[in-house]
Image (cartoon, rainbow, N blue to C red; front, side):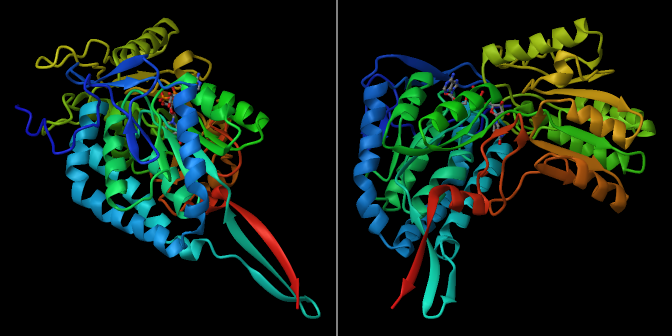
Length: 497
Ligand code: NAD
């Protein structure tokens, strides 16, 4: 089928040689570094643009622009600050379809998945629009005769976020709308793998009237991140990405005396009890594992069937997964797009090879998947393993691809114990018709995001998003009230008149 809308009205800001630009102090500027990487459409192999790998000088300029903008922005009344976000929300809604096409082109997810991601991002902008109420402090009269005590929340200065490739619109919007609504200024370092669509969001926030320097964007990878972490004027940093890097960022930022929240990888266990509705479970678990080609930190990649629940759910998932249509996410009737890059495709294939070598049984093999019209796409078909042991690589590590692993447990206790042997703790779900069992599970799971008969336990914007154990380093999570805590300092004023 022909691509319906390969072009949209949004084009990335590039210099004459097709390299995208940083956004610093309200201007699009070329990075001083000459190092760059291609940004490729993962379905077609087409090079969409090139991204610069900014260096210390570029990052220094971005932080300085944010620092310079801070005093005036801090003094801008919160009502005026959020009016800009209200305008951004309207613009995002107006442009959502174009943004979705652009996102699918650089990431590979289907257009409806892109539209869903953009909606989740908009919901964070909406929540940040409520900042006048969210910022309020507390007051207690007469803590001693004639003495009153109050807390006020004040912004801190320049914050940054370093974000991953899998949700390149939603995840930046977990951070900067809250940071700027609370009166801070910001530097974003997006993923170098798909930085293009967010460039358009910068154009929209500028159109909404954001003063220069309040939001800045620097492109790059490790060197840019190191420069950010070492910058003395950066007060705090949010990271989302793999646990390996999250741990490094957490340690370095904390050592530099900065506020830090670092969200890492995942291996989410879906525990199915024998009293569950197997048809419903299979449907939602299938969507959880294979949505976004498995490149989701909430993907329910380990299905633990307790007693008799094991076989029927597994058989249904194999059946549904076999019917998934892979292809270019811009086309209709495509259920699953490619993975982000050829090296990542090879990494996923290596995990599948390893699973076979370790003795797991491969029920559905996606290694040889091809899409005839797109020979250069990074295809991995839906893959299902059974007889997976927690100590195997595929049972232990985050694959971040369309690979389901099935494990059998004798009881709920056995299933929870198996889950706790894994180092990650991002999300988990239980499927049961017993309220008592669900309550018991919620009490003992020890995992931050818990689904009950829900396979993607994704908190909405007004709830905290983030994991525990090896999936999270820090204390305050993204979104919700935690975001207001993270971006403000509580000052206590005690007065006698
Ligand atoms: P990644 O860790 O490779 O990269 C994330 C960011 O860190 C990018 O901006 C990248 O440029 C930068 N980076 C990479 N290596 C670095 C280094 N050595 N030093 C400093 N910065 C570095 O992650 P990714 O492949 O882009 O994203 C996928 C990962 O993100 C998965 O593990 C997924 O589970 C995780 N993720 C977690 C959540 C969550 O809420 N916990 C949400 C989305 C994605």
